[in-house]
Image (cartoon, rainbow, N blue to C red; front, side, top):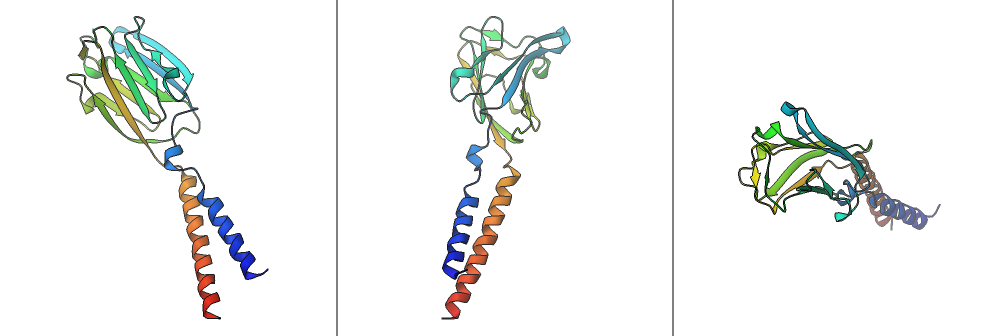
Length: 187
């Protein structure tokens, strides 16, 4: 095979391999999820509510019978809305009244970190916990006047295939580079 054909083949392979799934593609859209609200000491559970995550507000769900607490799941965030009227997490410790979110997909992205933003008075980082595929939000003891929010941003581990594709691309590039140097040195 001619060297120019080999160069084109290697270039095509590098390009095709480098067009793998990026960090931005990893997320929840299209995954089946489950959300429920719990007060263990009262033996109370609202849900589970199971559905498939869609982009945008189309999948916003009410987490109370009075439609006073909502959750909108986006690709990499959980958007809670408290209100429009006042309410409270009750006279419970933070994890004594909690909301549980779980990604049910067998190929769910692994949650490796979270950050949050809220205007709920008294809410702290200790009121949130997470595992590889779930997030728990404790809001026992929190009162809200209506209109408050809690946004939890999820950080996902990149898929192993991303690293494999990057390594394969690097090896192909090195082979091409070495071949190119040897071609120039033989001229």
